[in-house]
Length: 150
Image (cartoon, rainbow, N blue to C red; front, side, top):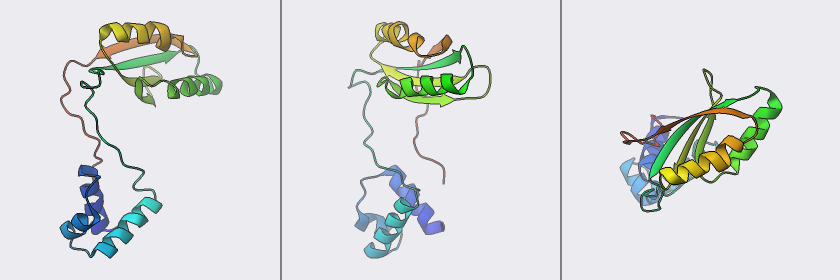
């Protein structure tokens, strides 16, 4: 990967819908050379996909919550069962196994606090192996970036 590849990746992170012509022009490449580089970056796994960013409020998912999850046991089967169950939950945007005072950090979006109460009581605490949860409701989103520094 060279500096041109890095510039291409930075531009694509900011605007995944940029045309090849515009991307080539911004990076002083021919359209064919630009296309070849982007194709190679995809093939090598640097670019894993493209997505539209949506307004959560307009889609009635304005409440973002983070939940610390403590499991009752830390064995491979409990980890696997928990992870499989979380992957099937549409309200969960992210779930990360972490080191520290708890086992998983879950990020979810729901309509409001009432919807979160239902999500917690009917779904989250019933996941395999869950012993304890701690919830943090987001009051203000100070920074939200999907861009990886390059």
